[in-house]
Image (cartoon, rainbow, N blue to C red; front, side):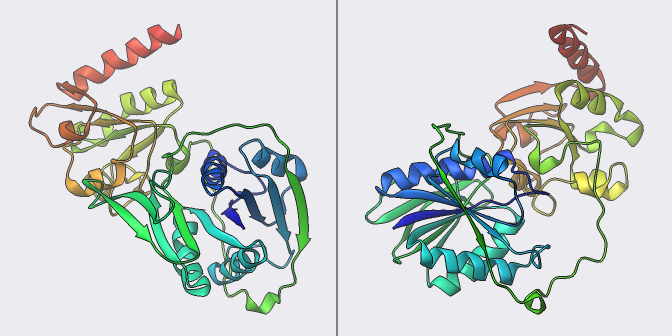
Amino acid sequence: MSVLIFVENWDGKFKKLSFELVSYGAKLAEMLNTEAVALSIGNVINSELEKLGNFGAKKIISAVNNSINVFDSEVYTSIIAGFAKQEDAKVVVLSHNNTGKAIAPRLSVQLKAGLGSGVSKLPQRIDPFMVYKKVFSGNAFSNLTINTGIKILTLAQNSFELVETPNNSIINEISIDWNPSSVKTTVTEVQKQSGKILLTDADIVVSGGRGMKSSENWGPIVELADLLGAATACSRPVSDEGWRPHEEHTGQTGKIIAPNLYFAIGISGATQHLAGVSSSKFIVAINTDKDAPIFSAAQYGIIGDASKVLPKLVEAVKVVKGI
């Protein structure tokens, strides 16, 4: 019996998201009185795999096959299902990102397992198995009971603290046989963003809305983001107007993010926008309208004109940083 944690790698490297998953899986394994097994698919060097042991993985499986060099949800699902059976996994944990969302439903069918998607806490009970998740765009929560013998959970990003432990893990490298023709996904072009922090990875995000009035007023937002080591973002109307690239659009129809700190500057807080950022640990809102919905979601609020508040905020950060 075990808890199997699928950890995604990016060009052979793990991110904070991977360590968060292992921390969660390890704590869940403690509750079930079993061990946490981390599963990596693809070529990852041992020194990188060992990092998973620092967060509670007792066993690390490195599944390698040179013919599987792109992500294919069907292939990955079959590989994970095979190891779940081999390790007698009663719970399989994945991230609630695009990869996890593509795999989890398929895995649920293959393993005949109940699925709890987007959970953000450890189970409240083990028998019956009950997990907590946010619903209705974060405006409510649900206690979900999973009655199947095997459970599948996708963990909401940035919802669980990293828990470091002594590394006493065992790494097993396993070469898996796979017919290259079964991989149906073909990559025709790769475009990589460089020089910027990715929205989905950022601990701090500085975001602007229509209240910034035009693209020419975006300088202070970019400056504040640079000072804080943050990513920049925007609301949908801003990207629709062409003020900022669509890749920065956050919200229900854009990127779903969960940073530790989110600045909403000149953003009114429409339901669709809040659906994409409501999992942020702290929201700081700047808006001229004291009744703007964003203030109901924010922990800190400044009622004022962004064009006047932002320069003062930038200067204050410079003072703190001694610049």
